[in-house]
Image (cartoon, rainbow, N blue to C red; front, top):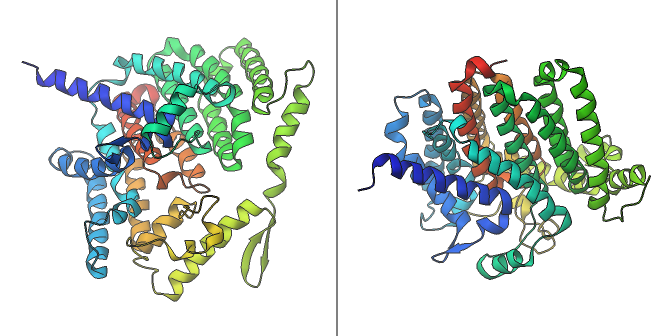
Length: 429
C-alpha cells in the first residue's frame, strides 16, 4: 500500500514537472488538449479547486488574512454575475476572471512540504533548462516539438518576452536563495548569474522594451543584494565582468542573426538597440485635446486603450464595480486593437484589466492581497526582488491574462516565500 508521504511526494514531483513544462514551452504547452479541454482551462479550474481545498488548511495559518481578502474578491465576482444574471455555465466568465482564480497557486506553492534545500535536483534541472531554452530560442528549435504542438495544441508559438523574463527570474532567484542557504555556493551563484544574464539580455533588448526594463531593474537590484559577496573577493568582479560582456556580445551575434565576425561585436549590439529604438521612446509622451499620446506606435496603442477603459468606466458608472465578466471589455471592440489575427482582446496591462473587470473595488482588494503577501515575508528585499520584474513586465503586456504566466508567478512566489521564512536568519537582509 502506498503511504500518504509517497502520494504527497508524487503530487509535488508532478507539479514541478508541469510548472517546468509551462516555463519551458509557455503558451504552446498551456494550449495542449486533454479530454477536449486545453491545459490552460484546467489551470483555471484547478485554481478554483485549490481555493476550496485549502480552506481548512489556511484558516488557522499565517495566510488567513490573504485568504479572507481573496474570498471577498470572489464574493464580488459572484455578486457581479448575480447582478448581470450571467449563466455560470458560460466558460468565458472564468476566462475573464482568471486573475481571481490563479491566486490559489500561491497557497499551493506555500504548502509544499519538501524543503527547498532538499529539492536540489529541481534547481539543477532549472539551470540546465535555462541554457537549453536559450538554444531553443536563439539557435534551433527542434521540429519534433513544433509538430507535437501543431498536432495536440490549439497553437504553436515561441515563448513571448514576458515568459523569457519569467524563466530568467525564477531560475536566478532560485540560485540566489540556494546560495544564501548554502554559503559555500555564493561564488557559483554569481558566476551563473553573470552567464545567464549575459546570454539573455540581448534577447530582452531585441524582443521587448518592457521585458528589457523589468529584467534590468531586477538585475540591478539583484546585484545590490549580493554586493557583499561580490566585494568579499575583488578578483570575482573581474571574472563576472568578463563573463557577462563576453557572453553578451556572443549572444548579440546570434540574436541579431548575424554571422560571427571578429571585432564586429559593438556593431551588432548597436544594431540590436537600434532595432527596438529603446532610448528614443521613453520621453515620447505629449498631451493633445486633454488626452495623452506617444510618438511611439506601440506605446501609443496601449495608452489609447487604457484611457478608453477609464473614460468608459466614468461615463457608464463602472468605476466602483467594473464592466463585469460577461463579454469583451468595450475598449477592445475597436477592430484596430484586435491584433494581426483578429483575436486579441487584452488591454496589455494587468492592473487596467482588473479595474475594467472589477472596478476600483476589485483593484483595491487585489492590491491589499499583494500587500499582505508582502507583509508575510520575513525578507522584504527578497520578496521585492522576485515580484518586481513580474509586475513591471505585466504593466505593458498581456502576460497575466494568460493562465500559464500567473500560475507560474504565484506558485513559485508561494514556494520561495516559504523558503525565505524557513531560512530567514540566513536570507533576511
